[in-house]
Amino acid sequence: MSRAVVTGCAGFIGSHLTEKLLSQGWSVIGIDCLSPTYDTTRRRRVLDEIAADRDFEFIEGDIVQIDPRPLLEGADVVFHLAARPGVRASWSDFRVAADANILATQRLLDALADRPGIRLVFASSSSVYGSAESFPTYEDTPLAPISPYGVTKAACEALVGAYAAQTGLDVASLRYFTVYGPRQRSDMAFTKWISHALRSEPLPVYGDGSTVRDFTYVDDVVNASIACASCELEGHEVFNVAGGSPATLNDVLDLLSELVDTRIKVEYMDRERGDPDRTGGDTTKLRNATGWHPSWTLAEGLALQVSWLRGVLGRPLK
Ligand code: NAD
Image (cartoon, rainbow, N blue to C red; front, side, top):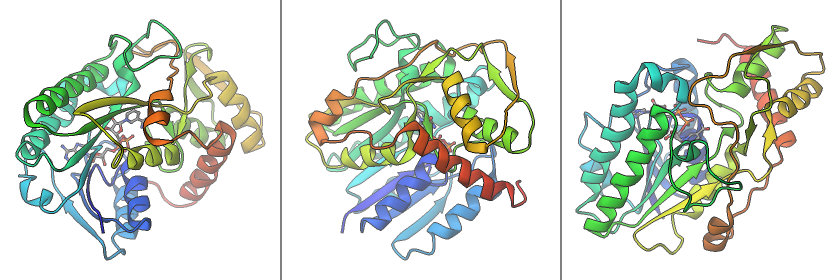
């Protein structure tokens, strides 16, 4: 049986990853500090469900505070997803983003430094490209983040590269492009929009809706991450993980209107700092390395997110 450590296991993507690893026969140690950023009660509920699996052990703790070394004992792979994600929050809360992203990653790398046999899969972000100079964007495109969040992820990639070069660690840094699906964070657009639509409230949209995003369904992201646990790697390698069918925000609003079966009202607002006009990732490198390709269409994935939120809103939200 393979053994994984998943940091950020209570989060949106980390909880799906943990469930899939367990369903594939892995044993998993999950670490999460349940940061108070969103829906702590709901994340705990999800963790309780996952904890029913006897091959799962949960450690509640902050990677910056705890010593991760004992938790790495016997591990084959560490999936490092713990972070303070989100472009908007990073402008006002840079210290939190710097600690949760850069410092936590450095602590983990330090613990991994004398265990080069353990593979690291690191959750980076398309935010490192900023307003990329070309589309689709390839992994060797120069990094030009336009938000503090993007800067922290670029710094993490540089740290990962330094540790890999100096210690012989094998690392896949995965640049996830806007991830969506059930359990998506409440600060992210789809969750906000669906919640507003189901309550017949106006949907807040930053900009005029022409912004393009390469939306990626969470199950595709999970599969890409697991594929990178065992693919051939030489030191530190970077891969785009993108959904493959970029859409404008207005396209999403049209789809959503059909799914909730009601005319939605939209409230257009000023663009936010740090939001690029467009994202779109080329995933040929990942496909060649692992055979992975995105399997979910935006319509399919969005329908599943709507049905999840219908269930959640039927229960009290904390
Ligand atoms: P999330 O906030 O739902 O999950 C992150 C989890 O990490 C949270 O449960 C939080 O409590 C935990 N955490 C934060 N700091 C910690 C620390 N120091 N020690 C232990 N636990 C800590 O976020 P998500 O959307 O699931 O994102 C997961 C990862 O993927 C992040 O690294 C994020 O930057 C990256 N990413 C996400 C997206 C996206 O669209 N959601 C896109 C690109 C990259």
